[in-house]
Image 1 (tube, protein in one colour):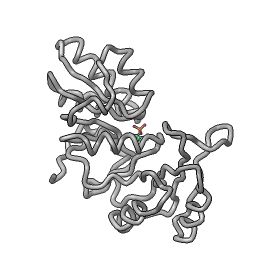
Image 2 (cartoon, rainbow, N blue to C red):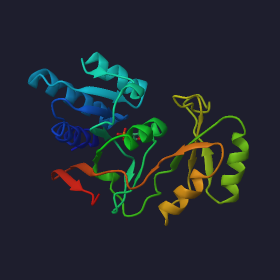
Image 3 (tube, rainbow, N blue to C red):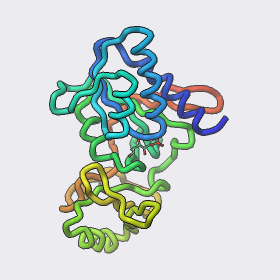
Image 4 (cartoon, protein in one colour):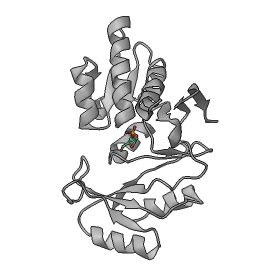
Length: 228
Ligand SMILES: O=C[C@H](O)[C@H](O)[C@H](O)COP(=O)(O)O
């Protein structure tokens, strides 16, 4: 089965967790694309009244075009559920996100949700985080100073570039620096250090956040519950 089919299977399973009346956070990425389609189908067929909050303009546009009512997060009460993709998930249900540069908005939505579900294909499950470069969102002002600090810590930073060789800009026009430092032995220590570096708006370590992981596997879809 190809990876997209596994992502689609996970997304369709997760859409079953959506209930009538829910205030829903919608993540970003190729797996979430299938999720939005699946939720829209439930909304149509079961006449569900749901309201969504998006983590990117891509998701907002797709959801709106499929008839899902979307509102601004500032107008929403605490969200009942957020469903999002992930780039890596370790055995302790800690994750890396931000492969699509949406991790700042995604984290804001995630921490304002009562419950978080991640949808992934099985290649995203890892023993230790870090094979996937860790994304940071960095303010352009003084960004090279941040870059130097990261280099000094041996975190092997690289600016993320687009197809034209230009620096990628996030939703808020910030830059993305990816850390290519390999295995992250102590995710909480690294997250704490990054949290205290002025100029870094947000990093892609999503720790102690997810409640449920829905995994698309060759052998079928598996639902894993984190102990939180
Ligand atoms: O910034 C992007 C997000 O964190 C995505 O949820 C993550 O990169 C996973 O994306 P995909 O489902 O396309 O692999």
